[in-house]
Length: 346
Image (tube, rainbow, N blue to C red):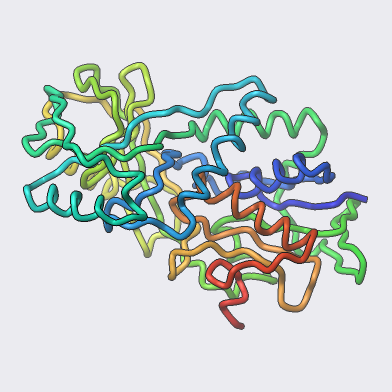
């Protein structure tokens, strides 16, 4: 008998697996790799939503939570996937500068926004109005993280590589069973795959397709992640991730010429050097209409739980949301309404 069955091994599912590990709970995790938004994600962690100069609820606490969480995994698995790097907002006008200073005066944002304009000159990135720097930022190489963690799960014999068959799930009063495995609880962390889940498909998780390029640009020479109409993230060896698009109708994971053109048009408006596209990926982010996570327990089946709706902030939200759900299951802690799946009724 396991403590948990976890369905999905993206950022959400692996965060819950690590939470189980830290609390000495046994688990098995089932994953078929059919949804790859976690691998496509740039993995930037940044407490501030720069488009609106706002701070998500509990962002400061989440930042304090994730650093030791991921560092512990790095140490245990012997891999490096955390990278500290400044995130800088490229100002397009004096008005944007003024908006930045106005935001920096807000008590909640003061710890995160540098009040001095960064005037570093990048020869291939014209920036006559300078940059605003965000503190406490960086990125996680999600490809390295996910691969290393899944390999460790595989070595421990707790990773089942197959599609989950909902018809094989049996719900008893005191436990759940799936094929030959019994557990006290099952946690679904399938991302956009929730639409195939008969227990939670009623929830308003719409999904937003995002496309990302990796380019090689030897003359770009950036040492910061740039936030403008798109982001440009240096990942080493003259490689940069460039993204991302937001598509609300196409729910496939197939890269498109339209998506590539949108990104290259915006990139060409920002940089002046030549570059080569070396990779073009797409994934569907698990986004909810109110931009909040979806976690909690099924309204009818007390041993069925959900960890989903992390949207574009899976790196930051995965660990604290996994902890919220775990504490709810194990100790009855009330999940705040703004992230509780029960804010949506059937």
